[in-house]
Figure 1 (cartoon, one colour):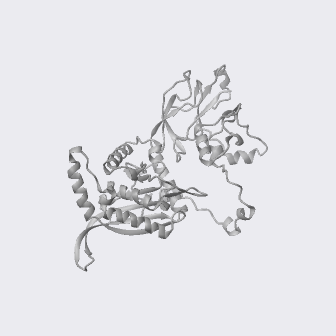
Figure 2 (cartoon, rainbow, N blue to C red):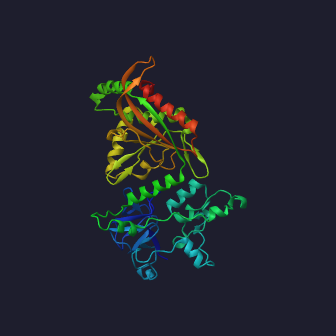
Figure 3 (cartoon, rainbow, N blue to C red):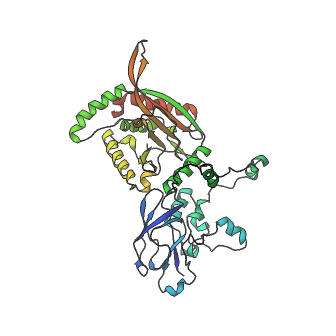
Length: 429
């Protein structure tokens, strides 16, 4: 039986993508691991590898087709002994012409229809690589999961909503009647909004994949994460003097450290100094990380990336500076691989270079916190002896997920960041 090649989910946030280019044609033989297409995700253009071996029998989605939903058939693969005559039942149109029913709708309309059992050869269970990765993260036994993919193959949708945790007790599962009857948030009526401005000149800008993802994730973040905010000011003069001294010595090596490099290092060390705050929310548990993996927001045209500097506490300032420049450059070209912008427990968003004095950043789930950094400004400061002097002062706001970090712990983390920035030489010890 021919195998359906499905539109892959190449990033955790991907719901649809553009089939940018086919690298094979009908009749070509492919093996597992061969790159067969280029897919534009919400973040970047990525290569798509074949999972099975066989002959490309039919291409269902042409190059350049946009908004192809994840898990939609895009081609048919013929196995040994099969021919194009076996494609009679294959979908003949692009996925947009006849969208597949949701799993919920299928279950409602055919309650007695059973899905095929997982395909096994000996002890092997057939599943897509993404499904295996999700199952491993959740601690699921694939042999106990029924696959809904071609020939019973286990796909992402089969494991995404499955949990290895025990079922909720009836007393816990029963929701109050008032909560159950609470009205859902009313979606925005685009036509109604447009009518409000029908007598005004405007241009309509369609949403691309990245903007849709940013809108969805940040709306979810503000609706589901209990944010609270901690604010501190930092005196930067010792750091500025130390930075100038280091840059003079590093000039021959072509290295120039920025204030942001010091902020990254200060946050990475603070996560080691306050290890309980180096944590993420994992739905039904908290994961406390050992390394300091710090994400840094990078603005690009039409959106932003948050590349992650892994093991930042172990790297020198010059190494962090070089890595950050490389990640930022490739982020602007949309050349980052998913593993370079996924993960981390903490993020930094610096708008100081735009003259912003202070702001509140939205937490990027599953991170436990994000530091919003403002501009360093000359301000009058009262010294310990009561005299007034002029100092360079920078405002910082720590947005914290209260499910992960409580107030006192967040204050301790922010204090450690301030101490590191006001004593920059100690960061090199």
